[in-house]
Each structure stands twice: as structure tokens, then as C-alpha cells.
Image (cartoon, rainbow over all chains, first blue to last red):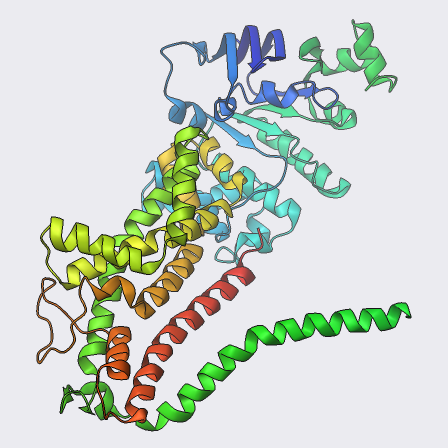
Length: 251
Length: 281
């Protein structure tokens, strides 16, 4: 059974048809990349899986999106809190709270009462270790997170997300604010995180998708044009439009 | 004429206009300090007036103003902040909320004597609180609501959208998001607005004229249903109603009133500049 499944998924922003009959299945503990030109609906698709599109007025959804076989778009599904704890999100711009490193990581724990105060130290260490920040920051836990480098901030945001113990990480162009070196390091981190998490990454960089992902989907004008193993999508695309995009003749 | 000459003239005019803004403030302060500073003494600040208010101190007026200002903020801050949260975080943009916003803008422009009459009609007469600290504080609170709502909304709106987005994505409900991810970062701005509104309340005469202010009271008020003396009204009385009072006493009273308002404003300015330095998100 796939971790994330979409069946005939459609989404409209008022009258604009942004996602058109999407069918897909993302596998557990793999990295799936979604590529495509700007405005193709890849971020919108990502935000279906933690229902962040709910925030936008005039959004209408049809079809099914299943996570662990539970339809999160069903009429009787209303536990957004449980969903979003299970499905974490990393955003385009690193967005730590203007609080200390420590408080950023314990933010979700405190509000959700997920752990006792005495266990916080251990959880902070574990979260920072899993994003390879512990060595750099173990003496700076009380420093304001706004003083970190962009790359450290993005790692911290991933740690903040991980501390809530999700299964799935949705990453919305997580490296687009970073320089190439920092990008490579975040990609390394993703490879490490894949052991424990199912990762879906939206990226405008085809090179990044090729480097980092196991499976890849190509979107164009709201359609999922092609979906398959990354190697296959990049070396032997079945659809002509995918080939044109990958070879740089499109978009 | 040469371009540079034109520019010089333009900048000189702009500079003069700026100076014109500052001059009255300096002048007022200068006169008050020059004539009033000598009248300030510990005794002046802490004793009751005597000899038909020609002698003694202004203690009850200071106490009355502090009572009024603190009680008014107890009413206006919670209501104002909650209204601001509703308008900024929950309310959809429809006809009703647009009307509410329009009402707030207009309330801010209503003259203070109208608030005084309103307070007289509603709190003193209709709700039977009588001429009392409670009526006066409620009247001041209503006068201050638009200021507090506007300042609080600006403070809330300056918290980046991304804070809300992250917070929701971590599984917080909308209410938890407001409590944990928005309000804490808006509080300095809200406080600044609240202090500025307090300073205004401390200096106003018209709203308290019919609702609380007493000409002279031999004792300090003991409950919120008592009348009280207040600095701005006291100043008005000793300046217009009492003959043969020394100029120095009048100026010293003005000095105290302006001093209180100024101190509050300066606290607000410091708070705001600290906030600006901290706020780099």
C-alpha cells in the first residue's frame, strides 16, 4: 500500500482549474520530487496533503487524497491537527520564529503537550542531531534563531518539524533561498532523513530532482504529465512534453 | 536660476516647516518649566489643597488622574485587543466588517466633549453609576478604544504571514496560532499603542467633566463610585475659577500634568525603538 495516494484529484481556485484529474501514489520512505514550470500547480498539489490550501478563500477540491489509506478530503475528515502533526512542511524561505534555537524546536511540543519538560533537552538534542546541527549549535541553544545562517535556519526549521514526530515531510522548494553549497548539504540531509520519513519535494530545479529523488513527477498546467522512477523520467520520458521540458526546450 | 540654488531654497523651506512643528512644543515646555519648576516640591505633590486651593498641594488630583487612567485601561485594553484580533485574524472582508472599520475611524475623530456627554447619558444617568470614577473611566475607555484597536491591528498585521503558516503546518489550530505564534510577537506594539492612548486619557478634560471630576474634595475617593479630582480639570479650575492664586501654583500643576503625559510618551517611544531593533524578521 502506498503512503500517499491521489485519485482523480481536482482543485479549483474560484473558477481557475489548478489541478486536473491527478492520480498518483507516493511510496513510503522514498523521496518523490515534483517538477514543472512556475504556476503548473506543483506547490498547490503539495499543499493538498496537509490541507494548507484550506487557508485560501475560494478553493474547491474534488476526488480523493489518501494518507495511510485514510481519505483526508472526505466529508467526515476534520482532524486537521492530527493530519498536520503527521505531515510536516518545510517552506521555501527559512522561517524560524524570532525565539531561541531551543524554543523553536520545543514550540510544537509545548503547544501539543507531546512531552514532559524534563524530556525537552533530550528531544532538542535528538532533533538537532537528526538535521546535523547539534555540533554547531549545542552551545548556542539560547541564542536567537534569527542570527543563524540561512542554511542553519532551514535545518532548524526541519528540526522544528521533526520534533513533532511526523511520518511525512513536504518540502516546498526548500533550497531556493540557499546558495549551491548549502543546497548540496540540505540534499545530503534529505538522503539521511529518507530512512525515517516519506519525503515529497517540490523543486524548480531539475538537477536537484535528478540528484535527490527516487521517484519524480512532471507537472504542466495543472496536469501530472508523467510520473515514474526518477531515472526513467529523466532518461527515457514517455511523454513528449516531459522530454521537451527536461531538455530545456520548454518552460 | 541655477538648479542647485533652487534646491537650496526648496530644502530651506522644508526645514523651516519642520522647525515650525517643533517650536510650539519647545515654547510650551519652556514656559511651563520656567514658571512651574520652582513650585514643585515633595509637599506640593503629596498634600491636600488648602485655603480654597490657593495653598497646599495637588495630591488628590494626581491620585484621581492615576485612578482614572488605570481603571480605563483595564476596560479598554482587553476589549480593544480582542476586537483587533477578531478584525485582523478572523473577520472576512464583507460589508459588516467594512462598516465596523469605518465606525472605528470615525470614533477616533469624534470630539472629546461629545464623549463626555455620551458618558453622562449612558453611564451616569442611564446605568445609574452616578458621577463617579467608574463612569469617568468607562468614558475614557470608550474614547480610547479606537486608538487601541487601530494600534493593535497594526501590531498584529506586522507579524509576518509566514508565522501563521508555519504554526498551522505544525498542527496548531487557528486559535492556538493566534495565542502562540501571533500575539506574543505583537505585544510590544500593542503596549506602545496602549501607553500612548493612556497619555491622551490622562490629559483630557472634556470626557471627565460631566462624568467624574469634582471641583474640590476634602477626602480621597475610597471606591469607584466616588467622585474624584483630576489634574486637567483641577488645572482648569485654578486657572479660571479661583481668584488670587499664585501663577506659580498654576504652572506647577501644568508641569505635573505635562510631565506625566510626557513620561508616558517617552516610554512608548523607547519601547517602539527597542521593538524596531529587535524586529528583523
